[in-house]
Image (cartoon, rainbow, N blue to C red; front, side):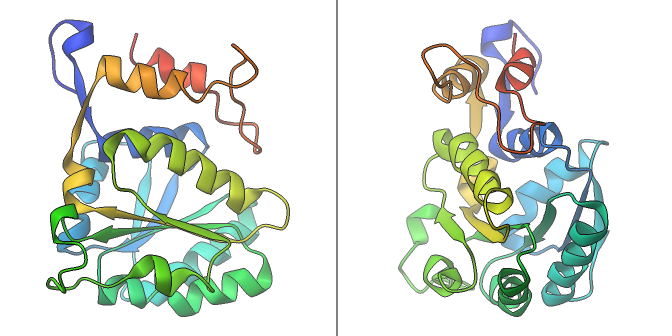
Length: 214
């Protein structure tokens, strides 16, 4: 986050994503980096609360996250890049769906202006993941990240557990949010006319996250 007056501070979508994961108790992620997800890996480098386990293949990363989720009772988290990186996760996600293992798979995607242009390493991940996950979405606006991420984690852990996925274009990962924007997006998640949202695993309190930006 940049220095300066509080309201002028900024945070990238990738940094905010990791902050939210931390509030959910995530301390380990599994993955294999690539060009379309480098902003998220840059954010990983800037923090020290989440450990990254480097796999040698994206399918192996998902299976490792499954084992982690089974043994710890926590959410398993996977990072993969666009195109072949994302498609390589399908077998693991399908297995997690069949075995009811809570997995959050975050994939990089080509820049948003290149979507549906057959760009290099572009694949329609939302359609591909439809039968391999409980829920998956494409993040098209920087302001939607927190809402979509919280909802995805809620779906992964709630009811019958299972895998969920978020596909995030590279430019969205790099986008910056001001302190006031983040506070507004978090406030918009409040429920019950002023009550604080408490997600299903009991670990994420939006007022805690909001306090980061006071």
